[in-house]
Length: 198
Length: 194
Image (tube, rainbow over all chains, first blue to last red; front, side, top):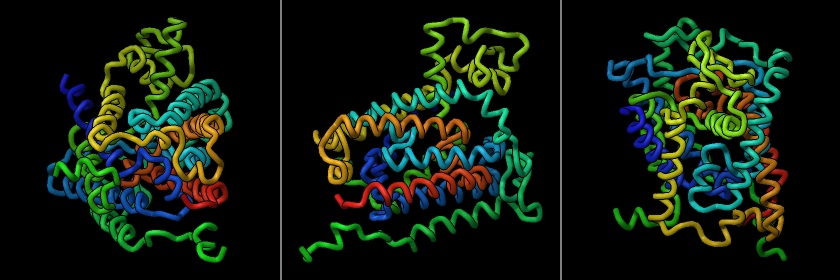
């Protein structure tokens, strides 16, 4: 019962946050991806940074149980899947979480995205045996690998000689620094360039 | 504060990043890292199981106590099969609560404008005001996004945010693939500014 209560609490906070940062608006996602407005990119990068600092700081201070971490497996399909997802992400301006929350805010195109998504997930269920047979799901770097070893976990690490907690903390600050340094836009589009010249 | 909640513009990035970061941290602190895309599989399984009850069955041999005729639902000791048999589990309720949280936020800020509900302004300026064209594109994109997410084993939440914040190698591999495809695609498709 506690876990259902926590699901309601954290889930609602996450959905609220996604809407507040503008991630439920596909316009902001698309403008992040066509590099004309990096506001959301800065939000995401700083979010990863803040979470990383809190998580690894918490582990170092003994406040957070490293057993709560859950690292996903690395395999070639992660990269291929990322590419396939990226194409749809750019067209729709939705990812799974923001598609569902956008529907909840009343966006009708998100409903079509979700129905397509349910079919896409079903297609993966149907093709899973074949995908596995191609070998793209074979684990690399030991599978559930982190960049450096984290005390209290059994995850294999890419760089064995470093402290995973310290690296997590440093990367957390690095993500925030990148968010600060990133310009608010990189690309000027046609309509911008031609303002005043027509 | 009340004024701030009612504003129909996104939070500034430092405030938004802090909010998002604290939520992702709280999830790890209290339960486990946030992830969403698996629940599309669970909902598919629930729908499938509603039409054909032989899809998910109890099994003494499976680690989770459940298995499936479908190889994907039966993988990892039948953990997906178990979630389908017991939909009132943490991850599924989390996603429903996530939608309710977003609804609450949208209601407070006055909702989404009527012409934004069919398509975002940047789509309209690039491809015209034809709803079915946007709906068809969103449908195909949804198919690609979830097929890709399941192949990758996670999405923007599970791999990109939760993965990179834990220094997971897979999070970096996923993010590289996603942005390498998404940025050129968006640059190619959306050439006109809003």
